[in-house]
Image (tube, rainbow over all chains, first blue to last red; front, side, top):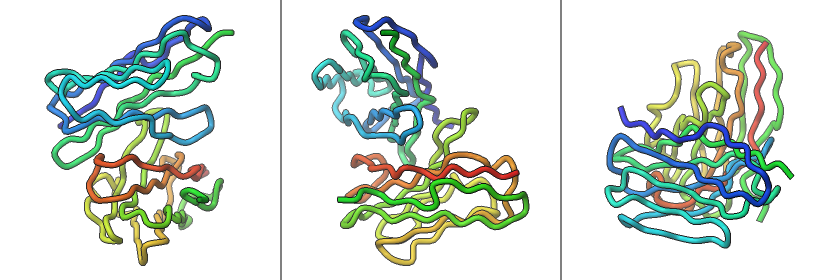
Length: 109
Length: 116
């Protein structure tokens, strides 16, 4: 069945370092969404990518959707302690929405 | 806007008991989703409704789980009988418009269920 894999599972960075999480699907996706979940909180929508090769930026966050619409990435430049949390991708397939396993980011001050 | 409201926030119950989780979606949203989150399995979609009608319940683990949406402002997820492996955080989410993954979802604070 369709799966959405996300790597790495955990990432520890020093404050100011960059961070990237990758999302890979076994099949072509219609679109992909990214969510952030703070420790003890609930997922919060960040962005949605629809077009092949699409790149979107939100301040220090850069989101990309692969040309084949099977992979996506989230890159954070110069991490801050407020970036701590788990980042999930959610890929829309033919008849379902698959959440990635998430990347838990820890930022060391 | 109060956002998606879930109750209770925490539930501790004994194996075999019935558990009912409640959700009030954001007013005006057409779609409602129930998720379960565990360390082992991550975030799983259980069922979703469009205009109060269940569209896809293929994620519901087994017959012990049932969900209803009697009107646009209320939904329940029931587990009967509950088992320890049902322990998880259950999230309700809503979105404007139809379709799965087409629109951003707004998640509620979740219900942390512990079955002993």
